[in-house]
Length: 489
Image (cartoon, rainbow, N blue to C red; front, side, top):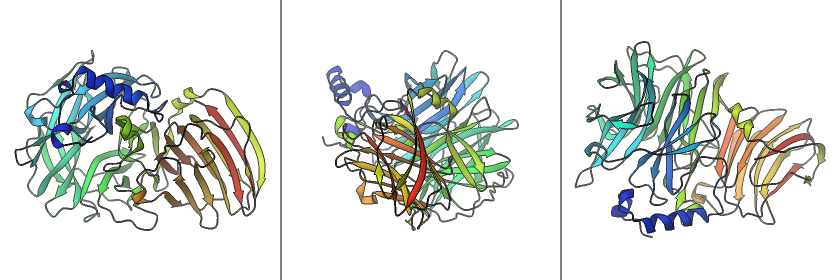
């Protein structure tokens, strides 16, 4: 199908029942549908939005184009959960049905206020010459789940000095005031973040650009998220236009963070350390965090990237969200660990403990296409230790530690149907360690790997055949003692 501009900007109401039914059947027949990740029923999912806790439930929206696996007219789709594990589809949350969001309800965030959930988002519009003009808009959800839009944008204009690439407000409260950071592009086509302040979430004052030491760092910063954790300030954002450097910045676009002092709200200054990537895998972008009732900072990301074709496209759908992760600071790094509630997914448990010596081994019950596994290598003199999973006669995905290079390496060269090969099939990061722990969440077409209790994370889509289910443990150039526990999901 050729996705013309007209097809991309059709509303779901313009599709007849037969078209929608055929699309649903096409999606249902896909061998790569996930079993425990949030995914669209049809069409394309991208950025997580409005991640919040309200009225006794977690709420999570996502960008959604329902009519195909492409970026078109975006809606907010609403999911909710009582436990961060089992999610219920709640239908469309925000429709692009006003003049100020005529070409898409773009990304944004949520905050509770006066017993209601306020959803702040970017309304995308285009004129007849297809020139973009963004508005920052407001919708309000009550305790019945009904969502109503504010009749006018709450931020009408882009401040002087910035282009119309101006989007993705992330809101929070400090003291008696609300603040929002918005991703922006300066007129010299460099990326940045700006700050707004409000007393009521309706009347907003432009405070200025957040001053960082990253004055020329990509051409656009998307999906900013500022929060304070363990008495430090953290700014997460997704810069576009970074040049690959060694093992860094290998994806088409990146997501990362800086940590430092808390934001100075008087002069919008943020002192911070180096920019660090949040995830070392192939498919991770536009993360958003929320503060839950227990005081945990929880993060969810889009398990995908813009401008990349995925094998599920031919089945009429694309992308999913990551599992929720609890975020903390260890040293000068953000640590991400799967929320403890995910243990509720565990079914049968299997355990092994063994020594391997320049060999590959398989074990009974260690197989599958949907599972959680923790594997620890210690007391090893091997040059390389690791795991092959979703493995078959010709397919395998490999996570390993190269002790000579002191690097964690994820290799999806032979993972099945290819994805984004223009950007390579191997991802690496440096880690100097005497013991290595791989914590894997494998689903039908994805893997999330937490290294050494969240010091690094590799998130990736993989598209193997249904018969590729083996798990293999290996050591090269020496011996290794290892133990592993696996749970079916």
